[in-house]
Length: 157
Image (cartoon, rainbow, N blue to C red; front, side):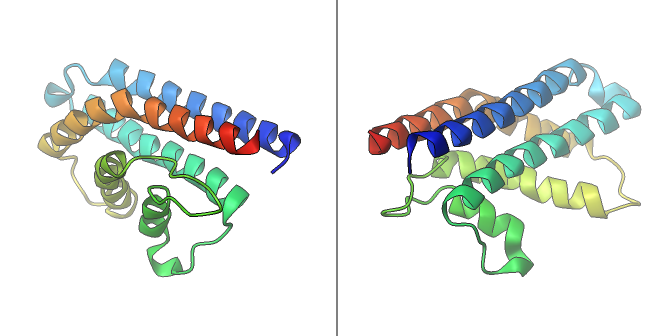
């Protein structure tokens, strides 16, 4: 990969990381008192859904730049997430750690239910469990992405 390609990739990743940060801010704004206000719980659930969507958009940027396909389209979302934890020899290092991938997988599952269960009532206990994972995710994702970018820069030099 040449310097121009790496600069474009870095810019796209930086843009998507800022999107993730914006969603994180919204989650912080909504997490207080959500257990006592269904509308707030629904808004928080929407932002938890958005958090995974923002991560998945980041994963698509990386996948399209390097390997450009996920073979099993019936399990696309899971396969894309799993792929981001892989060190693909000769192509790219893992974008995220296995631990972060495991935490994000719970958000992926929640996103699926949130999108497809139209008669689904928001489960505030499930939101509480996701918020515990959220604490880990928000503390870990930037470290993993920074590590990925450091490894990419080292390979490009």
